[in-house]
Image 1 (tube, rainbow, N blue to C red):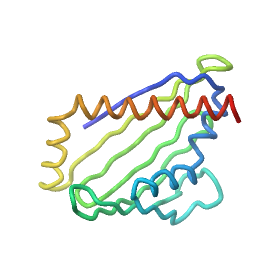
Image 2: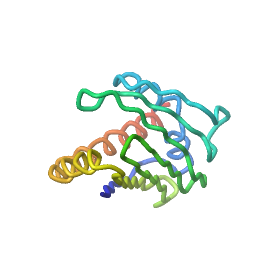
Image 3: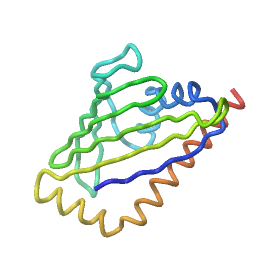
Length: 154
C-alpha cells in the first residue's frame, strides 16, 4: 500500500532540507505524542545507517518499530526503512527546488504486510484509505507551514 503527498514551501531547498533533517526535533515531537524514541546510532548528523527504535501503543497493544536511514543525498533525498512485527515500510522524502525561494517537499510512504494480522491491519487502512490519505496530506501541509514560519521568523 502506498501513500504520496507533496507541498510547495516558501523557503530555499537547503533550508527545507536542514529543517527536515532536524531529527532531534522529530524525536521530541514523537515523545510529546507518547512515542518512546531512542536513537541507537548516527548521533553525528544526517547519515545513512542512522537507526532509531520507537515504542508506542497502537490499538491498545504495545508495538516496537526499528527505523533506519538508508539513503541521504543532500539536499535532494532522504529514505528510511521501518520494520515492526509483521509490517515493514519505506518512506522517501524528496526535495525539489522550484526556484531559489521555493521548494517542493514530497513524501512517499509504502507499507507491506509480512503476517496475517498485519495484512488485516493494512486491509483496515485500505478501507479507510481516503481518510488516511487526507490526514497524511494534512499533516504534511501543517509541517510545511511550520517550516515556512521557522524560515521566515527565525
